[in-house]
Amino acid sequence: MRTNYLFTSESVSEGHPDKVADQISDAIVDLFLSKDPEARIACETLTTTQLVVLAGEIRCKGVYENGEWAPGAKEEIEATVRNTVKRIGYEQDGFHWEKLEFINRLHGQSAHIAQGVDAGENKDEGAGDQGIMFGYATDETPGLMPATLYYSHKILERMAADRHSGAAPFLEPDAKSQVTLRYEGSLPVAATAVVVSTQHKKGYDENDPAKQAELEAYVKKVIADVIPPVLLRETEYFINPTGSFEIGGPDGDAGLTGRKIIVDTYGGAAPHGGGAFSGKDPTKVDRSAAYITRYLAKNVVAAGLATRCTIQIAYAIGVSKPLSLYVDTHETGTVGDDKIEQAILGIAKLGGLTPRAIRTHLGLNKPIYQPTAAYGHFGRTAEGDFFPWERLDLVDDLKAALA
Image (cartoon, rainbow, N blue to C red):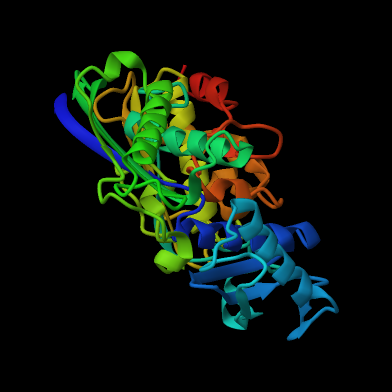
């Protein structure tokens, strides 16, 4: 296993056009699940200059049944979209929550998909799609996430908080970050490069050196607050390297749901099955199985069974039982990977990792998804009903199964 190398991860802010789309899609998921915990949602969002378009398939009691919208449902959907854009902070000439055009092209779920997914008299509920999903955990950070992604997220979270509070009034919503760390012995020892590109008010660029210096000094201060000083001794900084970033968000580039799957997961430190999360109800195993594999991998590392763990699971549409489960502790395990696989499958409360068992164990049929749609789905604090896949309540079960 290689132990001396450079590795890089990036993050994007809540105002990035793709993240605007993700947050809108998950706001729609939350809206429907708040009406019907068994709702089926596959909502895709397109954002561009003064335009938001929804497309996809739904089934929701009291909202959309038998091909008809309930009274007021369309208006509530539009209000949800506009409120999401307003919360992010877009009140610009090219993208404004109140002035944008909204088009709703959601329609009913395919009956052929429904018959494969729904539980029947003689069968359990099937997976909402075929596919492979991965979960990962590493002891690099307290949240058991890759350090490169962890710091990339934290930089942008801090900048967004300062923008919302007024502490950084020169910032606009769109931003990207990127952190490169040098690893020795599989742990980070130095941040060799940090890149931050942030949308800003007019004037904070090369045309006004004093304001540009103010912006750069602010960003460097955020970086210094987020990344431990011991890692910043040889850092090269790239702050708005193009010089100006006034036009951003959906006005600067079109956004689509599901285009930031590596930002959403592990920053490239682990494989990805290819399926996006946002806009999907938890019967879609692209989402729920990715959450359970993260939960399993995190508990494996937290139990001291490994310092790194990757878990893969696979499903077929309409079939409840997973086709395979694979554990890889990257030669850091204290027991054999096959024994961990057997232990996971033998834990009764996991229910054989069927889609229904996953949703029941993690409590996924709730409106908990919009907070996941910016700054990563993993490594977040499990509070209340939110981010239940970050819980460490399987540690004792794993230890007992392997005793």
